[in-house]
Length: 264
Image 1 (cartoon, rainbow, N blue to C red):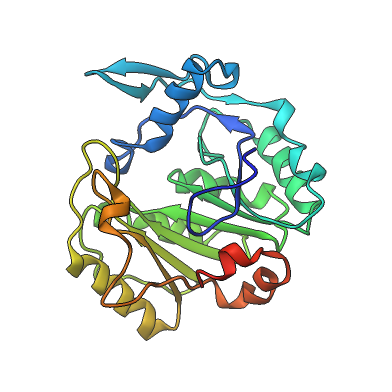
Image 2: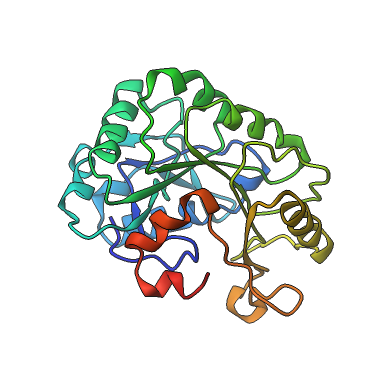
């Protein structure tokens, strides 16, 4: 687990599962593949054997492992934090057994001082496993949608048992018009960053923002992206957008540090 995170919408990361496989276009330049390769080179055995080199770049090789030593780590954190679950994997990957998913959820359920954010591209499995999961109120469940071909993931998300549901439209690779946002509490959008980053058109972001504003849904614009994301910044039409899910806002204010609240 990382004690801090540079991700604008969270405070820390927790990785009880490592490794993944490429599923859809949003995975092409996944930062976690590069990070896993780098951490392996730095001697972190946890990530060893999860990537291969293809066309000169690290890629997931399909190896997925549950890290038993990490499952109980949040219990040792006495101060409540906003925690991004599996920034280096996908909890609903088909190689993660249901029993492991349930153990990870037990840790989240038994540490209500934390708020957990989970993202998946495997929305079908999320919906299938949902009835077998005891969903605590401190878990925010999200799906990643990179273009209109994957909007079906939102329907799968709507059918799961999470109290708070959100969308990560990142890396945004195309326009998303006339989305059905019923039952959704938060939308994050952003461009791709790092080597080979694909361009983000401002009109795509404005369309998403306007849909959120009309629907009264919290909107967070993470970044324009590009090879050097800091240079491009994250200002949209003269301001930053750092909203949190409104139904969970009181929970955020109860235990998040000023560093993240200052962005909201």
